[in-house]
Image (cartoon, rainbow, N blue to C red; front, side, top):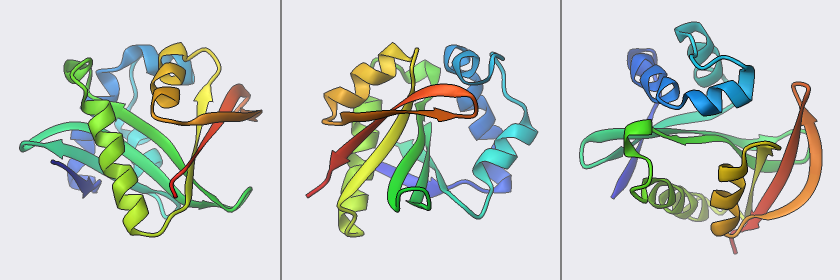
Length: 153
C-alpha cells in the first residue's frame, strides 16, 4: 500500500535524491540534469501546493506535487509525479497514481488535470494509459505543454 508523507524541511534531501535520479526529466524541464536543494525547497515547501513523498514498504519511492485549485481554471492539478530512477519499470508509478486518485475521490474531487511537456513522450504514454485525455495546448514558463484531464466520477 502506498502512503503519502508531507514533504518537510527535514525530508528535502530525500526529495532532492529522487529528483536527481531522473536527469532526463530535469533536462526537459530546465535544461540541467541536476536540481539544487534551493530549487527543491522553493518547489515543494510553499503555501500553494500539497507535496508528498510516496512510501511503499518503508521505502521512499517517489514524490507527488498537487494543486487543489488552480485559480486559472478552478480545477485540481498534479504538478509532478516522479518515481525514483532506481524504481522505474516496476509498476510503482501506476500504483502511486491509483492510490492518489483514490485519495482524491475520498476528498470528493471530480476531476484532475496535468500538464505534460511536449517532448516528454514517455509521460504522455503513461498518463493516457491511466485514462487522461488531451484537451488543449498551453504555455508554461516559456515551454509548450499539453494539457490532459481525467474525470474521477
